[in-house]
Image (cartoon, rainbow, N blue to C red; front, side):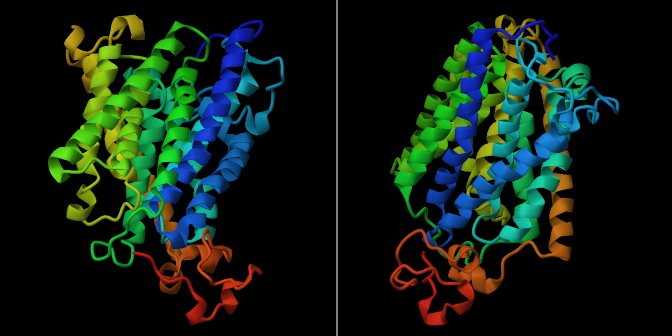
Length: 436
C-alpha cells in the first residue's frame, strides 16, 4: 500500500475518477455480453443478475467489505479489521497514496462488483433469482474480500509474504470468478438438454457490443490500477490493447484451422480471453510479453471452452474456460515474462529471474483457486438445502424471464397487447416456446 500523502494529486485523482467510471461500465457491458449469449427466454434474467450485483455488492462493500479487504491486517495476512466498517474515518480529506481514500475505495468496489457478476455466467438459464440475491453478498464477504486482502491489502500474505505479483486482478477477479463459477455449476447440475440440444447465442450483435464495452472499460481496470496518471499506467494501457488483439487473433486462428469458420463469437471470446490474461500481468511484462500472453490465452482458451462437454460440467457461458483458464495463464506467465523495468525488481524466467517467481505465482494460483472453489461450493450447497438454488423444471423450460420477472425481451405474442401479466396466470398455451 502506498504511504499516505498530505494532499491528493489532482492529475492522479482525475485519472482514477475516469478509470472508476470505466470499470463500473464493464458490468453493464458484461450484462449485454452474457445476455446475447443466452437463449431468448432468459435474456432479461441474465441482465438482471449483473445489474443487481452492482447494488448488492455496493451495500456489502460499504458496510464491511472495504474495511476487511483494505483495512489494517488483523489476522496474520488473512483478513483486515473492521476499523473502517461503514466507511468510518474516511472523510473527503483522507488520502490513499496520491488519491482520495474514498475514490480508492470506490475504484476497488467496481472490481468486486464485476467479479460477482462474472460468476453468473456459469449458472445461466437455471439459477433461482432469489437464491442469487442471497448468494452474492455472502459470497462477496467470504470469498472475494479475503482474497483481495491477500493480494492487495496491507499485510496480505500473497503480497507481502509470498511475493507473488498481480497488478490488476488475475487472482481475486479472474481465478476467483472462474473457480467459483465451476463450484456453482457443479452444485446446480447441467441445464435441461445439455449436450443434447443446441444452445446457441441468440443475439451476436449484442455479444459484440458487450465485448466492446468490456474492452473499453478494461483500460480503466488495468491502467487505473497504477493509481496514477503516469508511465506505468501508459504501459499497462498499451499492454491491455495489445493482448486483447492477439487474443482475438489467436482464437480466430484456431477456429479457422479446427472448424473452417472464424466466428463473431470467437472474435469476442478471444478478445476477452486476451484481456483476462493480461489483467494480472499488464504491470509486469514488456509489450512483447503482452503480445505473447494474449496470443497464448486466445489459443488455449479456445480449446478450454470445450472441456465442459468432456468433463460433464455445464458452465453455461464459459466462465471456467475463459476466466479461470485465462487468469491462470496470465498469472503464471508473469513468472516467465516479468521484466525489472516494469516490476521494479522481480524478473521472470526468460529474463534471468530463474524459477523462483514462477513458483510463487503457481502457489498463489493453486491456493486462491482451491479456496474460492471450496468456499463457494459450501455456500452453494447451504443455499441449495435451505431455500433451493435451482429454478423449477417448469421455470427452466418456459424461461426465467417470463416465470420470474413476468417480462420478455422480445415480443413472442405471450403478453397480448402489452399489458403486464403475472407468470401465475399465464396458461400453458401462452408460455414462451423454448428456443434452440
